[in-house]
Image (cartoon, rainbow, N blue to C red; front, side, top):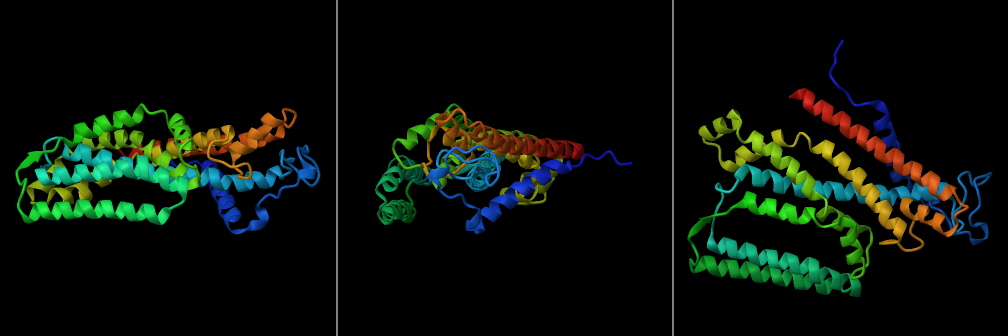
Length: 336
């Protein structure tokens, strides 16, 4: 009898059912709750098996509709943030501080692009979000990128700043990860909510740019081990370029634990999204999410069902993600 670890059935069944609910509520408007001010805060009973909230919406339908926001935000942010973390962590560890050499003009162009990026996030994006002038914002961003491209072409045409220097990528990446790690995610999003309207898209972006550091650390640690393996040196000896060694041999062997960390990240972001919805950040009164349903309990402390049923949904989702993550972790370690 094989002792090879496998994934337990119940986390997969639970998460599959939740994703099926998200898909159904996305396509069927009949599963969305309606406002019924004449039926506010009704306890569970016939016709409303889980009761109604402070706006008269059926709690069962609200939980179904709220799963769409809660799940999509956490999954979207985890996937985007995970991709950023894998990219930063793997490249930094593989190339280290001495394998990348760039010309001074490349440094200058990269610095200008960084300035454009920071300006877009800190100034342009909040302004566009608050005023709604999307076309103007896109035009300004394209103009800035065009300026950097023209500047780069002029430097190349006149062969200026051609000397090469080593780029300490790993050190810079570690310092950047440390800066991101010390920023309290919820405080940052609350601060942004005072400047720009927080919707599902902006929430995904904010969660992604504040959650990639854990993935970057994990992939960097794996890549530091992988790059010392004999098959990596053999690939270099036979003449493969650094990029081919990285993409064909190093990266596939360094991302084994990624799926495990993604599960844990989704569960953490799910709780963070519920917390923000509970305190009323990023949601309008008519927006339904699991956290906003629980918030209704504060308006009527007798309506216990507003806290219990959404809380059970959050608990089951988080514990299923953690169980799946632990199973994937055991499977990953059994291969080694």
